[in-house]
Image 1 (cartoon, rainbow, N blue to C red):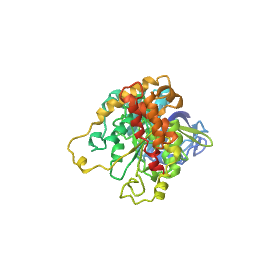
Image 2 (image 1 turned 135 degrees about the vertical axis):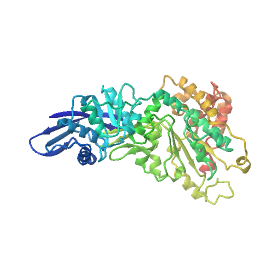
Image 3 (image 1 turned 90 degrees about the vertical axis):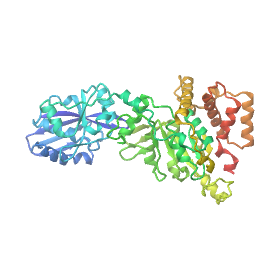
Length: 511
């Protein structure tokens, strides 16, 4: 008897339906699994055999042929255990197979018949709905995640016996339902850190606000203990809230990577990823023999924080250049290409020198050569993609001991949202969402200067020995500062503030 049952495979951040054909033949004994399965799928026969035995069923002693189509697409992981087990039971006549073709069935089996969670449930559920399946049956731990998708019946099960009873006896499984919008709106402002907890550092806070308002990449330069990491961790709390579309995009990536908890469903706050400086380039941008999203894709629609940036390997930093520009990662293999979205805000930090102090600090013990070698770890093309460089000074005792609380993240966020609304209106006909993404043509159109501003930026270029690449960056940042003040024109004080945010272009650092 031949039975067709349906599972799903993940390709990038999308899913593809897999047809699992199970044929049980009386002409011999054997178990044949074809269709490019990996080792985890080949080993499934042992898990299935023990699981069925422990719930009162068995693999028949006949010739069983299982084909996973399309046969030229590699299948991987243990998520097909439940599909294959149900297919074998139906093909051997132990359960009814009439309704099986209406469902996507996925799950990893334990030896006692219970189910373990799987990865990539959200894209699988979205694909199931698009292809007109009635429902999806999967482990209980993944049910909340799949329930984000409306117009699809989601059944979370804890044991294969529940699935057997569902098809054999019509015994109903409770559907998982979720009010996605309600859950999304309830947790949209759920942040663990607040800017009011940061003592002093008003200049750095202002730079963070400007960076968030324009989506600019920023690097913080300061001695250890000055609060660089503390400031960076609070950036998601002042960024505009995720839209429902952005939340779904972000959740899909984390679902594919298996980073969503069993109690969570939709990601409601912007991700904050902080990889260690020993990270490999594959772990940062994604890839591997079976490609997985890297840290920059997990930071999609959020913040990627690189603490002590010069400590990262040069090759790791250089592979970020293309994703910073294109806002997506393309991973190419001989037989396929995978794209992962990677639109993130880069926040980096570094010490001013190997000794940890600014070049003009009396405590600085680093030689000019050591400092130059330290700075050269960051290439020009990479720094070219960072719009704001801000020096974070050591916090004095008087500021640390002050009882008065600083401005709340909530108040800063309101100003950031207003500035982003202005940008959305300005770029509504372009594929641009913030000032950080504008190119030379848009700079010319939207960053016009009056005579005073023009002379000011000319003077700054000459006197401060600013590099040519700083010019466009200053104009972009000035445009954001003007948006924060709801000013249509860029004025001279907007330019002067933007000039302050180009520390690493000055002769002070590059000499």
